[in-house]
Image 1 (cartoon, rainbow, N blue to C red):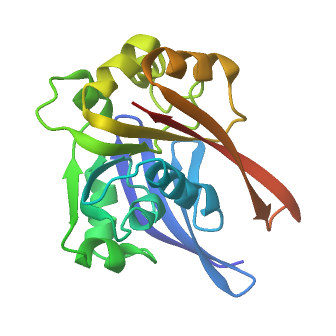
Image 2 (cartoon, helix red, strand yellow):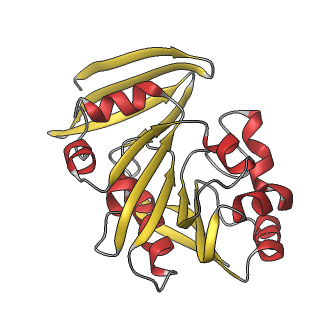
Image 3 (cartoon, rainbow, N blue to C red):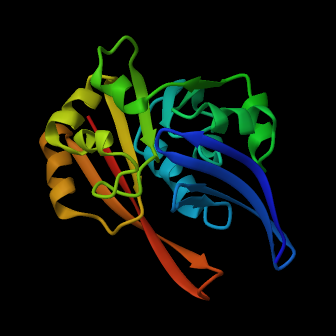
Length: 225
């Protein structure tokens, strides 16, 4: 199996590595942060469903959409549907934005060449804690492994009623918040969402796992004002 390291960057959260490897004749792109595997282009179904399910919950047109977390770009590209007027992708790591601006990844060109797309280097969690200088029709988030397994302890407050209430201020009336998780839907987090939003659903998203030969699942939470 052939490996090629495409980038290596030291960050406050650990060493960030992007590599490409051959899997049965197909290029697979993978990202690792410290000792943790963050993402693989082999498994993108649920990342794309995050956008599809989130946007499907909004009935409007000319939507202003924010994606929290750029990663390999699959959630962001899936959000570029016909109803979206603008897409702002917030990513804390400059290196990840650079990967796409250099078009290193399979969907980079589609993403950065679309005039609706803006890539913004910022701390998503700090942004939604702050004053709502701009509001969005939909906020789609794929950053942490799950609501209970965060990449950094500073992220934990988002998944509380207080944190969700703060995020709510950044949504327009009828706005949607959607969240990807590697874990099964958590009843306690659904209950927290229900204290803040008028409509809440938790979806289990199955996908074929080529490594195990079986079917794996992720989750997508969708909440609407």
